[in-house]
Every structure is written in structure tokens, then in C-alpha cells.
Image (cartoon, rainbow, N blue to C red; front, side, top):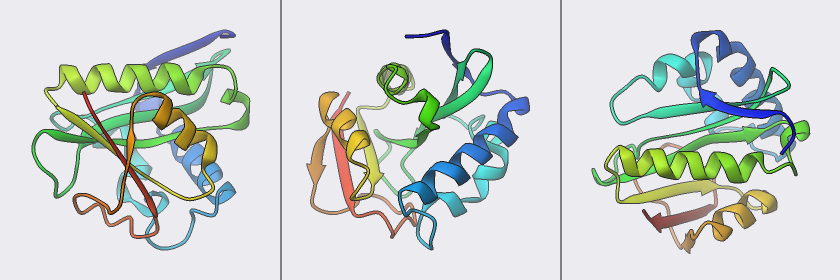
Length: 161
């Protein structure tokens, strides 16, 4: 992997991560109602992931934030289930192993936080993301879990930790 670093989010990363989320989600048609792009936490991801049992990481390539991803308790879900949240990468972070490295970091963190299962919501057309999830042992669900409010998502996955 080229000069890439995965590290915990810091307050100085908020604007970059918000811009990445607001750039990448529309690329896949995920900008209307019912998508994470409209979650209030997008404006202050650092604060949102200082809550208990939550963590968010950024990917830096040559010192520039080019992606991120995190875990947090599944809203409206069982206490042992976390959600992989807001894992998005700019094109320059794709195809270099950053997604795989971020997935490993998030799953390890979820285990360390005491979760037993990890859940993901996504969208038809996000094929590379779904291939990554399946590579890491996620299996498809027929319906959503919890109450994320992301009614625009139509693909759901879970895996044991």
C-alpha cells in the first residue's frame, strides 16, 4: 500500500470527512432522503464518535485525508450488535488496499469494544463495497436491523465477530 496511514479521527478532520461523505455518496446515487449523507453527525464526526463504544478512523494518503470508516452501536439494535458506519473513500484511496485495511481495523475495534456482531447497510450499485464485505465474512440479510433511519438503503449484511 502506498504511503497510507489509518488513524483515529481528530477534530481537524471534520471538514475533510464531511466533504468526502458528501462527494462519494452522490457518486452512487445515495444523496436523497433516507441516506447517511443527511445524518447530523456528518458535520462533527469527531464528536459523534467520542460516544461510548464508538470509534471512527481516517485514511491519510501522503498526509491528505482520503477516506474514513467507523463502528458504533446499531441504533435501535441489540446491545451486542455494532454497525460499520460511514466507510467511504475518494477515488485516490480505492484499489490500494485501504478498504481492506480499514475493514480489519474496524472489525478489531468492534471486538475490543465488546460487540459480537457487525451490521452494514448499503445500496445496490456499491458493488466493490459489497465484495469487500463478503470477502470479510459478511452475509446478506433479507431485511434491515435496528432503526438507523436509512430507508434508502436496500442491501443489508451481518457477520459474527
